[in-house]
Length: 293
Image 1: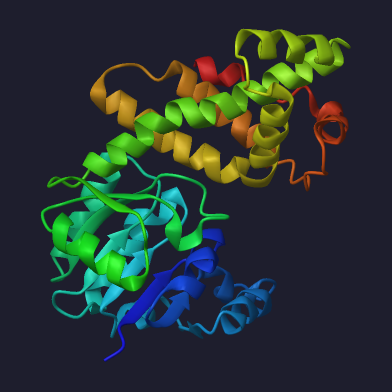
Image 2: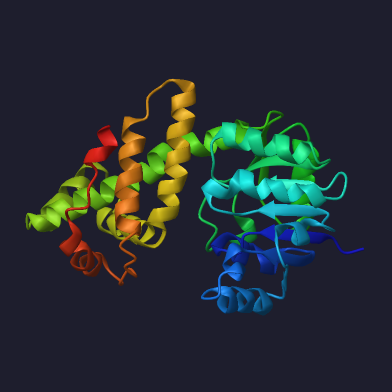
């Protein structure tokens, strides 16, 4: 009998995964609740062969498993859909949030008879889609990893038996990954404003042979322009992770503001580094001063 899978959130990740999943799919996204976004969201689901559910509870009601793919601030809220989960159904929390947030979501799912798995998506979902590496943790991690592989995910590794282990790796890794993106914006904008972009790129390339910093700047600016708001929300969870560990989060808080400052401009990234810098140049005042507070 074909598995029934609910997708809570139908953004980039869910749309990337849907074609490769071996299951009957339904989905709910908050955009279907808003008149100005309802038609586009429902159309995207229809084109992917995914049934559009009335709400999250409807999507989860008969599911063998749920893939939670929402924004960071909605991860625990989405777990509330578990009140209509069939007993023993999987809840795969694939959101980029702090370990404490995952543990709160896990408690909500467990209280309703579901089986929770902390899932960290360890690379951009495109172009890899269901071949993207996943790291999982939780008491049922081995069984959950097997289920994910059966669904069609090709690269699933177990981090441990405690909820929060996979997300801790993801969060701490993001200090570097998202931080480099934010530094790329700051460095490239300043180099361009000073008229020394080529010299700065050449100097960086000499220090890191083979790194190709022009391409790196181009890619990192592209990511910040497209996903800066989402990355800022994730970095707030990173800061919460570091605060809980007591190691300090000053750099991560600055990354929040730089990523959000670029993302909220809502500028579609043009091709090429120079074109991106031209598009961002009027906004070089993107504030980060409050990050030090």
